[in-house]
Amino acid sequence: MARFIAPYLKRLQVSYGQKLFLLATIPLVLAVAAISVVVADQGRQLAEREISGLETQLIEAKKRELRNYIQLARTAFFAEYGRAAPDDEAAKERVTQILAAMLYGRDGFFFVYHYDGTNLVSPRQTELINRNWTGRTDSNGVPVVDELVRIARAGAGYHTYDWVKPSTGEEARMITYVVGLQDWQWALGTGIFIDDVLTHVAAARAATESRIAQTFFWIGAITLAALLAVFASGLLINIRERRLADAKLKALTQRVLDTQEEERGRVARELHDSISQLLVGIRYALELARRRVQTGDARAQENIEKGIDGLNGAIQEVRRISRDLRPGQLDDLGLGPAIQDLAEEFTKRTGIRAEMKTVVFRNRLDPEAKIALYRIAQEALTNIERHAQATEVHLDLFGHQTGATLRVADNGRGLANVSRGAGGLGLRNMQERVEQLDGTLQVFSSEAGTRIDATVPLSHILPPEPAARSTAAPVRKVRA
Image (cartoon, rainbow, N blue to C red; front, side):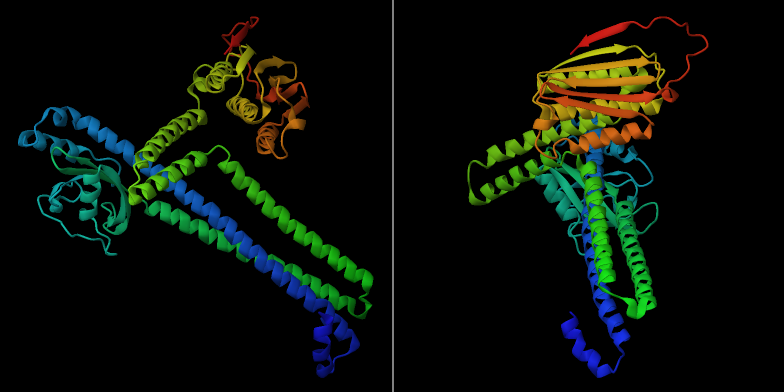
């Protein structure tokens, strides 16, 4: 760097001290600028991946909600539709009345189009009823009615377009789910406006840009401080100070890398309990089916069936995750029965025998402690299933003079024999949960197995109710 800068310094007639200052500051400025660009680029990439994932999750949640609404609507008029003939006009009239009355939220409604494009039900926009809307498009030129009819003829599907939002009277992005009632040649559907999702995503992107701007500001402030320090030093800059500057630059780079790793770790923890693998498998199966359909390969049906099976698995996984988010037993019966149910489900799913021994707490643990210990048991069983290769698991839940302890032990191969990085996020999640309660987490591992002790302090054990009698709590032994 100095070799390229020196010829230009000779022409400027600067002093030796100024040359030293410029030779010291120019590389520093360039390095900080390069680091700033890298930090900004990496930050934008990480944030964009996170925001895209968030947007996908929110939209998928909206789609699941739409399917539930359609299922409710079909349940409401199934009796009429199921016994009616294709030309039963009276039954059709009753069904349209049922659908027109099914309004939800500020903007939710059901609509019906005949396959010829005539609107039959539109409770929020009654001016559309009994008029043919074939060829109608939204403000962006996206076909609306024709595409809805096409999807309904094919069975069911989603369509996204801009539509007037009843609560505001302005156009907003809308996702609809439509199914076909083939006997009556009806396209039945409902929709959800996702302008809130788009607004949330836009706000997240704006926040990302704001954080990047703040990062630039602080890097610029640090750079300015460094330049002032170099200027104040003047001609006293020597090799030692240059080495110190290099060390500071390395420390700054390491700090950037550490920040990136922490961000990646946070994103990984968010995806840790997701169903992304199932959805990816379904997508691959359906893409292969599409290619085989295009090529006329008879095996496309096989891939479609695999995709359906995968989708059923994803649905079950969603239900399991929904149940795991807040198990009813935790509030109704207490921590012991909730973990017992978890152990039974674990045995059914994996075939690994789970034995549980617990002292009945009579709901004396506060909600935060119950939730934390339940999640720790859940995380421990997940790690055992994925990594331990165990055949038996023992769970103990008991109280003592210093608090309450949950112990999970297995006869697996131990952490030393698990591949590098396996289970790291699980143990970290457990540690964070226990630290939030001011408790302790101890892990004992050997070739004979692994034992995890999670202890919460007395501050999380509630005093007994005044009417309760102090009796010895029985010990229950549960074998799943």
